[in-house]
Image (tube, rainbow, N blue to C red):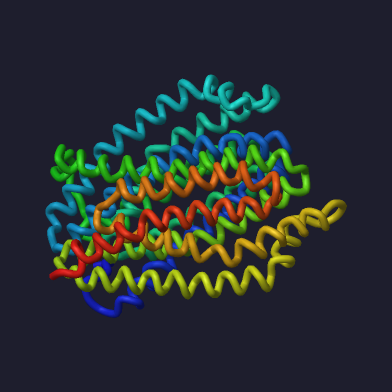
Length: 446
C-alpha cells in the first residue's frame, strides 16, 4: 500500500522525505509556467503572450480556491489516517469529490458565461480581448479535472505519499510542453490549441491519480456505493477549506497593490522587481513545502493520539526551516549578480541588475522570517486552527502593503524588503504566543 505512516519512525527523515517531492513538484511547475509563456510568445506572437499573461491572474484565483478547499480536507484526512479510521477517511474523500463536482461545474459555467464582462472589468486591451476570452473559455472546461487532480493529490499526500503526485505532475507538464511544441511550434496552430493542450493535460493528470489510487491505494479506493456527501463532514471541510482559500488569496492581492507602487519608480526598477519576485517564488517554495510536511505530520500524529511526537515534529520542522534559510541566504548572497544576469542582457541591463542586487543583498538576510512564519502556519493547520493562519496572513500582507507605500519613496526597491520584514515580524508577534499556548495544551500532553 503506497502510504507513509508518520506516527512512527525518524521524525526528521519523514519530514525531509515528504518535503523533497513537494519542492521538486513546485519548482518544476514554476519552471514549466515560464516555458509555457515562452512557447506562446516565440511561436504565436506578442498578443498571445499578453493574452496568457492576462489569463494568469484569473486562473490563479480559481486554483487558489480549489487548492484551499482541498488543503482543508487534507488536514481532516491526515487526522483520520493517523487514527486508523479508514471509514471516515473514505467518507471525507467522497464528500470532497462529490461536492467538488458540483462546485467545479458551476465555476465552469459561470466562467464561460461571464468571461467578457470580467475581462472588461480587468481593463484587458481591446486588441487582445477576443483571444484572451477564447483562451479562458477553453481552459475553464478543464476546471473540473483540475479540481479532481487537486483533491486526489491531496488525498495521497494526507496518507504520506507526496512522491506520486510529483510524478504525475512531471508527466503531464512534459506532455503539455510537447503538445505545445508540436501543435504550435511545428504545425503553427494558435492560442486555441495552447488552451486545448492545457486542458488535455489536466484531464490526463486527474485520470492518472484516479487509476493509481484504484490500483495501489485501497485505503482511498471508493466504490459506486461510497460516492455520497456527508453533510457534517462537508460543513467541517468548508470551514477549514474556505479559510485556507481566503488566506491564499490575500497574498496575490497584496502583490498587485505593491506592483502599483513599483510602477512609479521607473522602467529599471519595474524590470528588477519583476525578476526578484520570480527569485522570491523559488526561495519561498521550499519554506512553504516544509510547512505542508509539518501539517501532515502533526495531523497524523494528533489523530493517532501521539501528541508528544506531534510536538517534536513541530520543533524539528522549525529546525529544518532554519537550515534551509542558512543555505538559501548563502546562495543568494554569493550568486545575486549571476542570478540577475539570467533575466536581462543588453542595453539598460546594468541598471536593472544593480537594482536587483540591492534587493537581494537585503532580502537574503530576511528570508529567515518567512521560514518561521511558514513553519508556525504549518503547525496551526495541523491542529486545525485555520482561522489563526488567516489572521496571521492578513496581518503580514496588510502591513507589507502599508509600509511599502511609506518606505519605497525614501528607500526605493529596498523599501519593499523592509516592508516585508515589518509584516513578518508583526505576524510572528501574533503567532508565537498562540503557538506556545496550543503546543503545550493541545500537543505536549499525551
